[in-house]
Image (cartoon, rainbow, N blue to C red; front, side):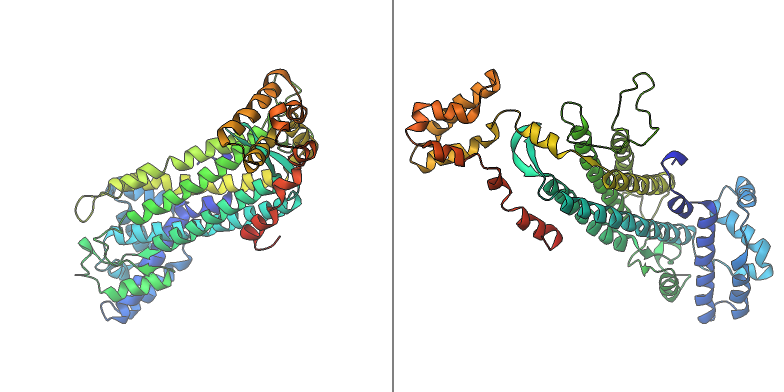
Amino acid sequence: MIPRYSRPEMVKIWSPETKFRIWFEIEAHAADAQAALGVIPKAAAEAIWKAKDVEFDVARIDEIEAVTRHDVIAFLTHLAEHVGEEARFVHQGMTSSDVLDTCLNVQLVRAADILLADLDALLAVLERRAFEHKDTVTIGRSHGIHAEPTTFGVKLAQAHAEFARGRARLVAARAEVATCAISGAVGTFANVDPAVEAHVAQAMGLVPEPVSTQVIPRDRHAMFFATLGVIASSIERLAVEVRHLQRTEVLEAEEYFAPGQKGSSAMPHKRNPVLTENLTGLARLVRMAVVPAMEDVALWHERDISHSSVERAIGPDATVTLDFALARLTGVMDRLVVYPENMMRNMNRFRGLIHSQRVLLALTQKGVSREAAYAMVQRNAMKVWEAGADFMAELKADPEVRAVLSEAEIEDKFDLAYHTKHVDTIFRRVFGRA
């Protein structure tokens, strides 16, 4: 990803220096296991480990690869330049995919750990803001139209519950992708003992892949990237909510606007939701990795490398972008400016219309058919829509309604507290406390 949407810790995971360091560790741990089995001399394994403090020369490896046209061979050649004669014992019985696939999974596990920490930070902010606005009444909307009252805290509790599900999925996806393959050509272990794989897996914090067929099956990676895509969609969902709430006609909440910040090169009055608009775009970039990851599952026979070019791009791009997006969303929600007065004003804009369902239900409970009750309520509601009338006043003036409901009974149906009486129940379900 471009530096604008990158954070150093995640970028470092995908740097050539980190990749070659992981390759070295895989080869060195494998050599230890081979020495323990008597396949190579113990002195050879010790000689290989002497290169552990070497700063691998990326430019030199690239120079070698320009001739060999093979990245792993280029690395092994450069490693031999540091290890010396004992380098002939490196990579015994192994194939390139043993190194490449195991390394990729180490990188994905490390990336997942950063993303899980990102999610924890976001969840903490959402929980704090949800309790801050647990009782801040606002209008709920369906189809973008006023529906019935809710609270802003409930909106944030919903986001918290969604990201908590995303976190659980990522924990599962991390576990699923945390496998190691050191099984040699076509995955049969013909030239490398399974004990080598078990040793490398333990050393690298992975588990052995049950059947690797020379490559680790890409259904694991497809699930990993699909999980990232779902988390990105959750980011977009919350970002779109903020964008809608910041519209001039709504202005119930908005991104923090810093001193000295400029909203437009042409219009000095503008305060635009640029961060959440950016998050919508970043979510699209993360989801862009999902379909290619799915298509990587179908490889030819025991292996091909049609997946390789894809993963070189989507591995860093998706994780780096999602890391940045989660951090940005956390900042947006931490400093989100909320306007309870505007929420109340918007809710009252249509003069009681949002209580129509309660009146409908009251009529049916008094014996009026649902069809007749709906018609009675709707004809009065339309006067509010079309002429700006007061809904309660129209209901009180309607002879058919008054024949069933008293003025006091009508007024009772306009109580906002009725709609928020179960907020504590929702919070206990989400947070375990109210």
